[in-house]
Image 1 (cartoon, each protein chain N blue to C red):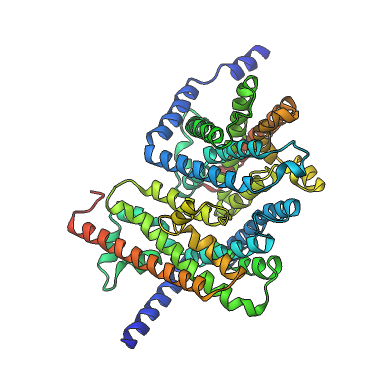
Image 2 (cartoon, rainbow over the protein chains, first blue to last red; image 1 turned 90 degrees about the vertical axis):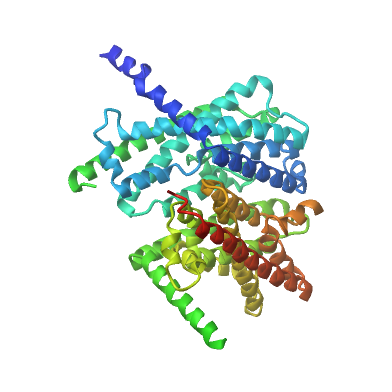
Length: 272
Length: 263
């Protein structure tokens, strides 16, 4: 019995690899859109680098945060946000057009299909954006603030962010079944990520009460944790950050499973 | 002449009213979507409240200036999507040959395309502007005419930019996503402080990407009013409106002289 569970967990369905590749290739095939996205990303990082140059960070944080670390921090948060995109819209459209019901008869479940494909897409976007961001951040600051030994952990952390993002997007997409539109909920979720995740300013600048509240939400696991590698020199605890992310990956996965189970129940009861 | 103008306004009014009504299946949904956008804008602004609580000012700009910026962009953008939300679909309308159905009508197709969709969330944007201006910016009722004038001019520039970036599809097929991204980029740029940029970048922001007219000039008008600054905003918006109409007309000419692009 135990062996069966272990083999299910560690021997992925053959479709997983194909779907990951599909998501990866689809993203890379949209060259013009990808170029536009990379340009927007680069311009945004440059704009904020300009704003951060005008901000006396070091004075208010006893040197823990400075111009260079802020540029790298912001580049990382933006890379995760840009790589995520608007995935929830696909599920929303599938529900609206009735395609979701049509896809239920496939041997590979609809939600796993979407999640795996989306992860492939997220990683492809990241593979395009991160080199641009790293080159730009280095060009702007003249420094590489991630110590070499931490690079694999930065990438792992960004991948974990992606897992949280895709699972939450799935939940946001299926909400459409009950509310008629996912956008309003998504917008609030997005601002939650921006604010509580520390998209622009690290949450260490927030009032203490807001910092405490933020760490009880999934948002810092999406942005703060991977971006805070920029403060590695100031003693950032990477292991705690990664464990925090793993916890939220599990929660997001459970939420997606539960949401899909509710979708199936809803369709079974009322049709599409 | 007067009759023609009156007739055009009546046409636009009816078109806008019909599309807004079609976009809102129920009053509850309308309020829900508008309320969500309202909350969204205020949530985002908390980041700037935190920033200015830590650093007081950014190269001369204070919280009031950020509130002016956010209020003006929110109102302008809200107005643009509430009444002219169809502009975001312009490239897809052209790509899939749907423009044909607008060409059969007796009037110019651009207003009908722009007003073919209305987003109720835009109303939430517009309402949030008053919170930014009066509560967070500390403006009084006497400032309202100038704030509104700025916002209407900004709306004209936003709509013109949508038309310009989406008109690219007339010359290069499959650019819809690229146009979406360019438009998003323009909007994003417009909502961040631009006053600290170098001269070369500021030139770009008042020419290639008109974000300077949306996110910088209106704030400078409110900070230190001069007729020249207001004149520049009026001239800028008029120029972009004319440019958008001109580019769309050129594209339309190309479209009508060739077969259906989707075929």
